[in-house]
Image 1: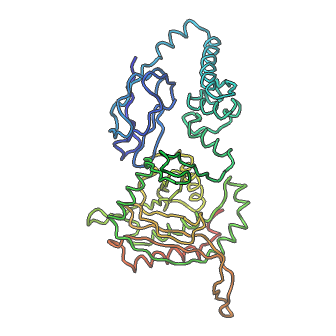
Image 2: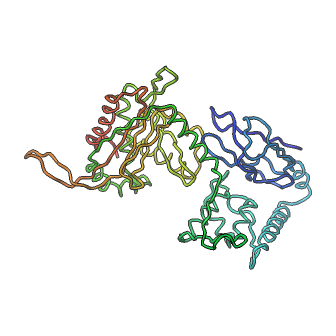
Image 3: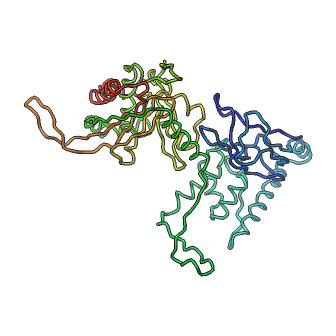
Amino acid sequence: MVFDVVMPKMGESIIEGTILEWRKKVGDSIEVDETLLEIGTDKVDSEIPSPVSGKVVRLLAEPKDVIEVGRIIAQIDSDKDKKTEEEKGSSPTQEKLLEEKQIDKQAAKEGSQKKGSTGQSFSKGKRGFFTSVVRKIATKEGIGFDELNAISGSGSNNRVTKQDILTYIKSKSPKEPPSITTPKTVENTVSLGTLVDERVEMDHTRKIIAEHMRKSVDSSAHVYIFSEVDMTHIVKYVSKNGNKFKEKEGFSLTYTPFIVFGCIQALLGSKDMNSSLEGTTIVRKKNVNIGIAVALEEGLMVPVLSECEKLDFFQLAHKLQDLVKRTREKKISPEELQGSTFSISNFGVFDVISGTPIINQPNVGILGVGAIKKKPAVVSTGEGDEIGIRNMMMVSLGFDHRLIDGAEGSKFITSVCQNLININFQSLNL
């Protein structure tokens, strides 16, 4: 029977998606859960697995086409009924041997294209099948079955995807300095040492980021103010309790949860910073939903910590760790990338002292966090002022001047700093 594949719904507010790449062509066989295509939305790119096994008979959209949710994009002639008939006449052992023979034959065929290939066998592993593209890459790179089977998979049922094996290969390869390729001469008019410009089309993720950034600058009246906060006591606390925390909780205690916690308290005391604008209407949000900017190789994602006002510090640290980890592993859902009421961009992780991040729409404010640096500072004591070595951090606040004036912005950034300086460690329950 022919099965219709439709553009999936990737989130409540997402009504369409862009075809980025078909992983199969008409006539190709495909297994259930094997990647059929990759689609992109304004939130995230996703690999779409096949809902059935069979043969691809029609592809009803081209790469770069924007398709509405629910519209048919492909048809697969399902072999479910055929397999049912075959199962009646063959034992489970025979079926397994036949399947492994077919997979081995395909792997050997693909491996013969590489000089010196051994035609490795990639039959079913502990997580099920390996797709043809994964087997092909493994054969090309000389990765054996046991090694392939040990790779952590991010696909359905922990299936190893193309991106998983490429990431694994990249992690194994030693970094080499980039080489300069000498262009070929054209009719002896171009010297061998001449460099030519490279023209590369933006990928889908970069296009979406560019569109959002331009839209934000066009719509919001950006203003920035800066302050400096003494983080010495927090640095000492993390240094003293970090190992114990990691042993107990399974992940490292960083400065980020403290910064987010201080920001949440400031938002709860701000009139309009936790708001958005709809024309001339101010929408004051009932929940504090913090967007956390996470840098990826492909660009930037801003997953959202929802209802932060309900979290204590311990819960916040765990939720933050989980959210960032899944974002980097590309396991974040589209729903978790929307609904922020305020955002934080921590460029201090790249050893940058300060910056002016663009407001994440439809927020009216964004906090920029710089690197913590040791520097001499004036320290007040009971006997007067002294010069001491302190761990200082620059913070910036970008806000939409259409709604937030300088006075309110200044009060907010001061509140964030004071919350960090006066944090009560005993109340954190760590």
